[in-house]
Length: 93
Image 1: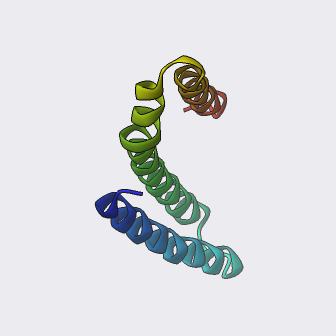
Image 2: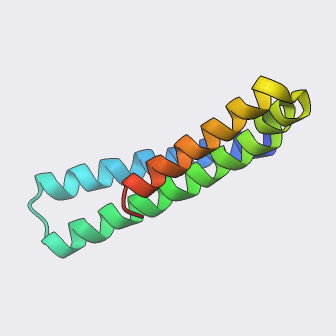
């Protein structure tokens, strides 16, 4: 991974861990549903930020190399990106 992206991704993952622990405590304490939903939505936003970093890293490293290689490698890169696009679409976002 690119050093800067790796650092930011690890930071985001640590934030997510804390958010998840908080969510678990909220559920266990029977907190107000809207507050739990708000926390859950914050986690989804954090996951989206993490995914954006991971996609950026993939594009700047692996996809670039695969396109430079051409042929089957280039086609594999396109297929991977389309699969990620499909996963995002199927998620309903």
